[in-house]
Length: 65
Image (cartoon, rainbow, N blue to C red):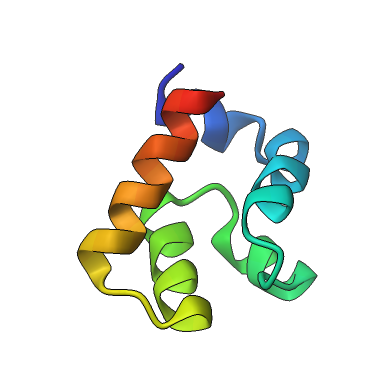
């Protein structure tokens, strides 16, 4: 799976993202709107992680789908 597929079906994948990162709010998920960079940024902000950690989590999540 690639990120373009996630972006195209973001409404379907929001729930899966919410399962992985429960601290993301509905507003966060709406703002992200399928953007990989936005998702990493929100994870970084909500969980106090470094940019590299957040990007790695997003990559791992994508690989697990």
